[in-house]
Amino acid sequence: MSDDDARFDPADRSQYDLVRAANIIVPLSPIRKARICGVVALLGALAAPLVATLPAAVREAGFGGPPATTPLGVAAVVLAGTVAAGGAGLGLVALQRRLARGPEPTDADVWTLLAAEDALTGVGFVTGGLGVGVGLALLASGHWGVETLDGLRENGIEPYLAVSTVPVTPRLTSAVALAVGLAVLGATVAVDRE
Image (cartoon, rainbow, N blue to C red):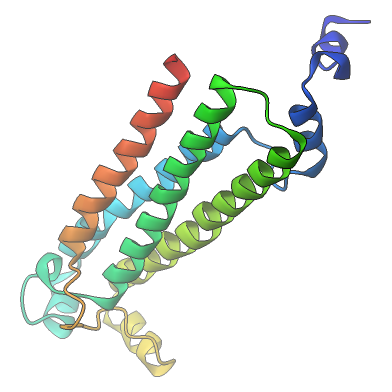
């Protein structure tokens, strides 16, 4: 047997590792998934820079005040995605910490842990990724000019709709995303060092 084959000897793996390898949806370690969630959350910090650098024609057509401090519905979408990715990332870090500190999960706990990992992965990757990705794309849409915004509005999409009932500004979204993303990435480093 080569060195590579010995590394994957099923006899050297725990029961949990074998069940996980056969049943997990995204075959990455929980800590790696947490890092991806942290990066997704950190990407939400682009909200304020994206609207602050909009062309003057777009700012005049779409905003009554400074774009970064205007409450926007799309900023709330980015914030929701950021919080989802960050929460899932921290949950995955906690799961990794529990697995590393032991004890070995019982047969009943194996399925609970696998379900928790899959659920957290789905929340982080799908809810977080879509919220941040779609939200940032809509916030950036003004960089393609007023004609692009008009086309979006014709299709029922208003990327710079001011929402006074939800006071989420791009600046707030960026601040929260920076804090949440760095917290998740810092937690992954801390768990790796244990």
